[in-house]
Length: 137
Image (cartoon, rainbow, N blue to C red):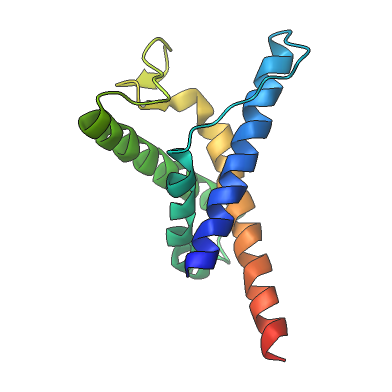
């Protein structure tokens, strides 16, 4: 279980680095500066909680599954941001200045990115299942 948590955490970090790097490129930064926060590793690791959900909704249409993941990610991101602000005094990813922000913790305009991330986590889950099956053979 810990190994899967680490894999999801690392995958989330990689996705975030690519996301922020693309954002830098679109802003004209030819250095393609990208960033993430150490705090994000355990937050992305929580994608392990999606595994039983994925097992239950596997046959649903992709648009519905992606929507489910988007909502769950918004809930996790909001709660994580609120928790960090309560504990350390700020939320590292403060979205407060954005029009689509909710209390600075989530951005509704990121829904397509979270939709895609949820489906990527599905692929990772399936890959982990296949690796586990091959180990048993």
